[in-house]
Image (cartoon, rainbow, N blue to C red):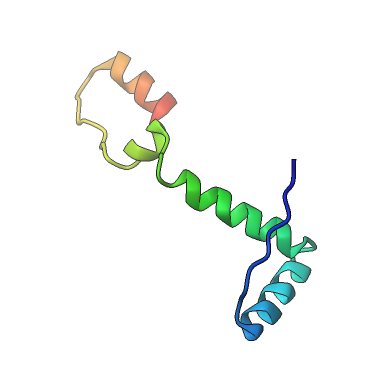
Length: 75
């Protein structure tokens, strides 16, 4: 269920935001809702998001099982 919200913003920012929304063929309300959803979800990162980029592939020589798994999941 949608709920109406009144906010006060700088007039220049409102103009820029409306232009941005129009250029993306969406409403300003939808953009604000999307941004609020993104910032409220940042506090609880998913497991994948939390660990992405933290590990590097190990160097293994002549391990066919490892090479098959690396080709499937690391590339």
